[in-house]
Image 1 (cartoon, rainbow, N blue to C red):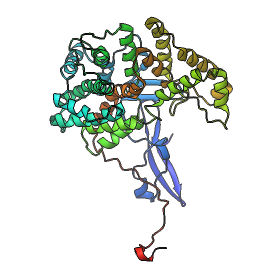
Image 2 (cartoon, helix red, strand yellow):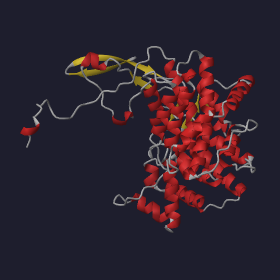
Image 3 (spheres, rainbow, N blue to C red):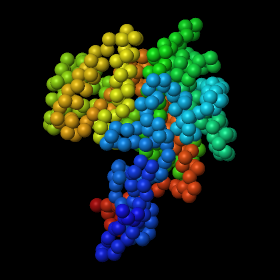
Image 4 (cartoon, helix red, strand yellow):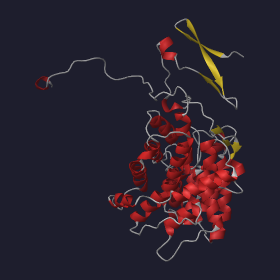
Length: 429
């Protein structure tokens, strides 16, 4: 097989090198396409465009495979540890016991926010979306930590990463507490990552929230399953902003804004809204699926299908099992879970969905689990942001360490008016 691809334009032949990834993906390198041919490629949505070479995450959508640094995502299921996975993604290997101890200590030491930052929360109306507050406050963090504007070496970067991963929990919890008019709860240095977050979210003065081990494991799993997913919209945004040499905080704040969109991080909210609509409208799952298949109907089956996966989303399989185990332990009898299970059963047997490879995705169960734990719906996307942060940081760092990195600057095909003259105001019709 040739190592080059041949392109013929106007009778002239051009050769372009072909790169092959670790898992056999092949890409035609067209970096000098315009310089040599005068042409560019047109790929709306970038579905066929590789923006970088990355060693962080591998996805095979046809086979339903997701791996972090080569490790299948399923291998984190039995003892889910978000902090360990964060280290793995960012630094490229599982932490040694000493590395894990030191990193955990950094997370604990950095959980508090500067007291002055509390005044920033007061500037937002209580109705402000938590994602708006989260993005703004991550940007504000850089003002309180100017020492992280320029990162010199891996130790300095590690401190910045630990600070951001730790403080995002506190920002998220404070944003929620502000929205419901409750006092802010300081982080507890005796608690681990997830229990500390739930403590800040749910504790009351003199009544500390207790995190059950099953809840801790479920949240750990949700966070780590969202920790990275290759070049998705928000990660690509972080890379694009970072390509201008914007600092880590600004780049990740931009990622939050991208994740805010209902087609990205807000998808699990849409699933829950759909299940509520079915339940409250007393529509049978069978009737709802029938409406979803009708082209003239505006009904859509949310939580099925994925831009990348053309098979079962492996994350959905894992969270489906968690939902089955966790809700009985919490004493929650959620009719929405029964509806979700029935929708899944119907869709997996219906040729309409099978032929189109519309399988349940990660959003299908994550909202049900968080709802059962007591996390409000407007915090779902914030939870996604906390989980995705290590992936953003890993990609920002990988890009910053890549030799010859260029500022991202896509081209376009202009389809507007041809050259025309300005008409003075008094001569316009």
